[in-house]
Length: 152
Image (cartoon, rainbow, N blue to C red; front, side, top):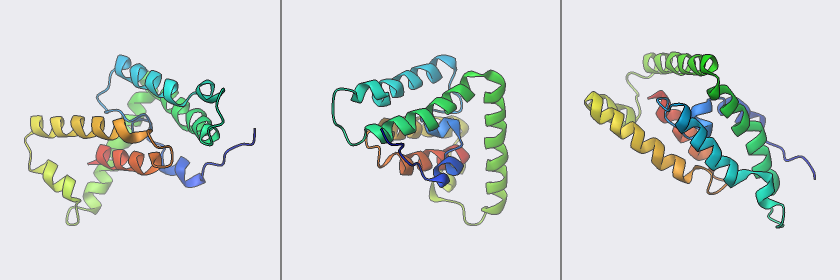
């Protein structure tokens, strides 16, 4: 089997383990494991073993080079705290840079009460996560949308 090439920018842009797994930053150990297990069933190489699916190599590459490392990072509490700290830092920088040109979603979230914003965030993550790996050729764009939402 030839190695599927994942573009280098994917590794830079998809370094957020929460976005890669399609979960909320408030996810607990059980939720992280459940999402990983769901993705493992969906993308694991054994799933494609008996078929000649052209997406087999891409699924294997995504699973082994993006999903597994993201899960390994989040299942370690210390590494999870570091990931959250980095997201918060990125969000602060983005807010300072884009106070005037904030996204429509960002403006909408700012106008919400804290409980409304939390509900919006959780529902948006769940919606994106449902579609995230249905089409392997679309997962990058959807993961980028999740990443942007995590930084709002």
